[in-house]
Length: 139
Image (cartoon, rainbow, N blue to C red):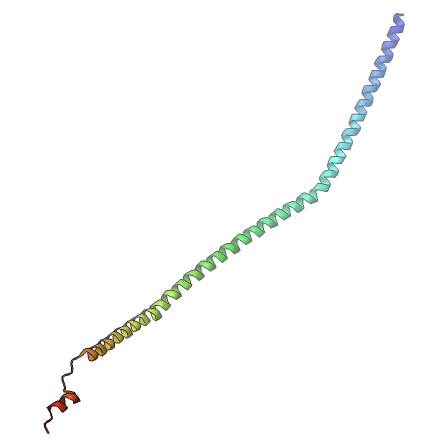
């Protein structure tokens, strides 16, 4: 009976060894498949990654160009605003100030003329009028 048990134990050990060998072989095959899959995935993703890198570098370049253009436009509008302000100051100095002086002279002349007119209207008559001459006439 002990020989029977020893035989069963021997068969069980043999079956366990076969299962372990099969598991190692399957694990090695799976590892090779995973390795090949990783290589294929790396080869397939390499162009995508390089395209993404190119796109990001182009996007960075485009954004830097856009920033430069915006800065140039800002400088342009700032310079334009300064020049318009200078032109308006020059126009004011050359046209508006003399025009104000001219209008002031005209207003003064108008006031003087209206004052002389008022004096003529309210001035007493020193020369005799026709009615007074007739009253003094004897004859």
